[in-house]
Length: 253
Ligand code: IPE
Ligand code: IPE
Ligand code: MG
Image (cartoon, rainbow, N blue to C red; front, side, top):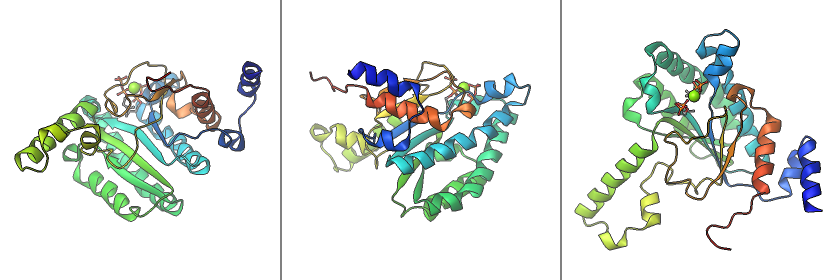
């Protein structure tokens, strides 16, 4: 009977109310991939794909707010993405600069808190200032935390955490024997949120690309061929529904 109800549900468009009947993930992480291919398929410059990628993120934030998903981590620009051609990098910086300004009022009104996670030292001053202003404006919001992983690399984050731990040891703030998972997690950029329950990657790539390596130890993974600019509300709900069918055991039986 259960199998039958799965088949039935997967055939129709899911509604927010149906999704809300089952367990809602606290934290959803997304690798928003495929913007360049979306544009190339249309004979457009890659940046047109990045521009088109803003809308699905806005929709996801709104849906999370409606569903009661408290944390979103959106992979927007990786440490490795700095190695892309100069014109793509500068086009992306300009896009982030404009988008933060264009969206901040709405996000704030909807109770969304913006948090930038990543290596701030590499971000151009004027872009960083925009992000930091957005963080300040929204810092007391409590509906949804939107972590924007920007200039982000998980290995670099872990190395920075190790350095902080060394400093704590040197300053007698912690004893080596007291270093545990909670302490280590508290040194990461994501210190204020629970680990992700669900990680979505679009564009048909089956890899993690240096995203949240520590935090996804027991995360459920969802991959779709859809390119990020085409990622619809229905597909997001489907991903949550798919998550709800999983049996999370955390090593137990
Ligand atoms: C993801 O889309 C956005 C960023 C990495 C900034 P891509 O730009 O990686 O698009 P594809 O993977 O080349 O299609
Ligand atoms: C990961 O996508 C980074 C973001 C989505 C921001 P990439 O396109 O950079 O990853 P790879 O190169 O396919 O692994
Ligand atoms: Mg890509």
